[in-house]
Structures are given as structure tokens and as C-alpha cells.
Image (cartoon, rainbow, N blue to C red; front, side):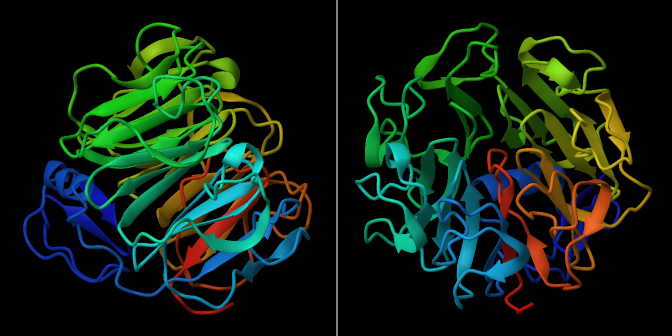
Length: 403
């Protein structure tokens, strides 16, 4: 079994990793070891400078272009090429730069940009003055971030306790979630939040009325609660009242509301605890949409399931699929990101593709598509942020080149 590396593979039978966006990581690496080092922030990070780009809906300035005009052409956010990570929520975007500073822009409703106010910003604005931010995860109306010291911070809407403060009080500036220093990555969803720890545990809190927290009940929690007892969670993506995750053994799991077959279980049943999707152990990356899921296998193939009314499954049709179906036959898919009714993916050749709704020009303004359609001709795309809640727009990162 192998795990994808930007531009290359980590393989148990050919274990030396070379090339790719992040340089090289020579040595013998099992999937478990990779997951452990990724969680601790020790796995080699991309060394190239990266630019931020946007396309689609921009009514609140969420593309960071200094205005509120929708875009059907991918446009760079300023001239900087120092963006490390992006995550988009509902009409707002969060980002961390390579210098450890935290930035945000877009709608300020509920204090979701973390600036201590509800002001909208159409260009990136720094959140505070700290330089020890590591990663971000936007929620529907808020934000979450992990610092280099392993602490977790939150801000924005809190009607279901999703800020992890033990209450339902809205916060317009970052507040610490508990006092623990073991947080690795955080994933915001609709009104729920998930976070992984450096030892591979998974925690969920916030809205849980459909079992979307994975706690085997329909309760909501205002503080982090561990999902089961496993310590093998690698990555996760949450959509509207559901979540999909990959474990270090390459298995794929889902839970929450099952409408439209979004859990990939071959039915529309709701599950309040993680349930494995099939029996394969070759899943590498996953992305949730509003009512869908998409995943890439270690062989570079792309798969999709769930609601297909806007062609967002990329399989040429508009019908829902309750089990994973392959998108085309290519084996060159590298990364995947979902938005509201549109799905995006990049290939190993650096090209960017999208399928589904084009209501705000997010796949180039040519109208909705039911097959993967290339966005422009550039071959610079290095990856995409976690953003299952971005409604009809996309913030991108490139390898630093310009379009």
C-alpha cells in the first residue's frame, strides 16, 4: 500500500520518497509513521512560496480581491507568495502565512473573521500580531486554529457550543479551547467541529442532532469529546451534518445524516458512530461537500458519492449515488476539495478541474458541468484548502507562479 506525496508516492515496497512539492523525505516510511509525523507537524512542509487565488462568489469580499465582484476567472489575491494554508467557510476565508501569522477576510457576521468585530473585509487582514499559528480550519460562521505549541483556539458563532467553551456565547476574537497542548489539526463543519491530536485521537463537539459528531447519540456538546477510543485517525472532512474520514490503515469511514447517500454506505441511513465505507484499505485523501463525498485512492483514482443534482459527482450524470463511483478512469488525481454544489480537484500535472454548479462562475462561467472540466490552462496548482462549506467559491494555493 502507498500514500500520496505531493508529486510522488510513499510506498512500502519502494519506500524512498523524492521530488514533489515538498522536496524529499528519504528513508523507509510506513503509512502509520507518515501519519504520526504529519500529526506532529514534523513531516516535511512545502518549501516553495505559494500564492493565493480565488474564483466564484464574492459578495462579502471572501475572495480577498479588494472588492465584492464575483469572478469566473481565477484571480490572484494580491501579489504575495507566502501563503502556507487556506480554509474557507461561509463567505469568509482564513489563512496562515509561512511566517506564522494569521489572516482572514470576507464576511464578519458573528465575528467569524476573528477581528473583534462584525466588519466585512474584502482584502486579507491580520488577526492579532502573533507569529506562532500553525494551521486553520474554517467553520460555517467561525474559525479555528492550532498554534505551534499545540493549543487550540476558536471564534465566531457558538449557538451549539461549537467554540468548545462550555457555553453558547459568541466570540469575535480567538479564545483558547481548554488548556491542552496536544492538538494537531482542526476541521470546522456546519455547526460542528472535529480535531485530531498528536497521538491520533479524534474529538468532536458542537451540533450533534443527527449523530454527526460520531458519539453514538444525537446530543450536542459544548466541549471536545473523543470519538471512540481509536488513535488511528489520519484526516477528516465534514459537510452538512455528516463527516468522512480516513484512517492510517487506508480505510474510509463516515457518519451522520445519510440523505442522498452522502455517507457512501449504499443507503440513506443515518449513523451516529463511524461506519466503514466498503472494505478497501487504499484510500488516501477525502473531501466532503454539502451532501456529498469525494476521495482519492493511493493509485491516483478519483471517486465520488452522494447528491448529484448539479452534476457535482463528475460522472456525467445528475443522479445520487449511495456508494463510491469512479470519476473517469485517470490515475493522476492529486488533491480534492469540495464546496457547496461544486467539486474541485487537481492533477499531478498541476492542472485544476471542477464539476457541478457554476452559479457564480466558480468553474469558469461556462455553465454547470456534470464532468470534470479544466479551469484555465495553468499547470501551477499545488493544492487546495479544506473548505466543505464554501458556498460556490474557491480559494486556492499555487506553487508561486502566476497565471
